[in-house]
Image (cartoon, rainbow, N blue to C red; front, top):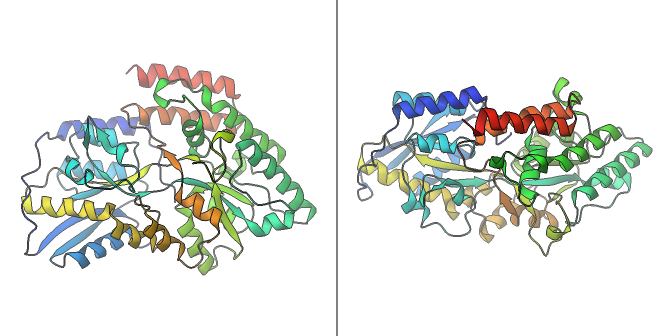
Length: 439
């Protein structure tokens, strides 16, 4: 599943208006000692039958606090923010709810719909990634419980068939493009129809890396020139046949799971959430069984390549915040304790045990994750999962949602060949200035 969802600018504006109209600046009621009697708190989730992380957290917390029941409230994954906004406005939102990414965090926080949880965040150790994304003016309004990062998946069997050496952690994007072409040529010579790599249709597959890895790049600057070399590389790979073109991906509704899992592509840049999906699909037959691994995402230049350095990648945290409409101090205490649990090592080990990449990546959590059946245990895979400088895809700003919508238009225009990269950048910068930054 994709961890970010594009929202229309009009929807983002509507969310702002609704939240502003119902916002409350009141503090939470004073917390009380942890209650000894029965308490029920509610937790938002989505796709509960196929997304076990929410039940895992609820069950794990109850095991520690038998008097507490965490009641799950299901939302539609694709329309989560819209539905949550409506419930917050109506006063029917759950006690604890999920921030799927950073794109709409400012909207919720500005609207007074997130309680101050600085006391929880201040007690979390430095093994928890993504904490800073939820801080405003020195206060924390959510804590992360998972932190996916983008890596490079590769099919060792297809590499062997094409007679191309595996990734070793030293690749720049130019190395990656060269290998994608070599793989395509080698696979064709071996009689295979597979290609070197697969890039899905999301804007993040290009822009997320460009923003994270380019020195001085800033989404809010309105200067989008930093994306140019990344798009030039992608359009060249499409033209060479080393990856499916954008029109084929969108028209034929290709999925990254099938393209990599059914061995139609030897490489796949994708988030770490796909590890759990691939393992499950291999057991159900929705993916082939083959030797695979993960490597660090290719880098802008050699300054961050190699296992002695820290590769730069991107990925928004997924966090939990507290609805400030809670009126009972006992529930406040329990809700805060739940956030502390969800971000802590015990919950992280439980999440790692079902293939989720938690925000807490201590050595014990990593050991749990790589003990799972089907997870590649080679040194490079462990390095790629454990060590990286993960920049946010959606830097916290009131302009982020609008700017990402503008850049999504650029993405489609360039990869569908309806505009050249220079014209698309100029158009995006003008639109961003007139419709987002000056509003």
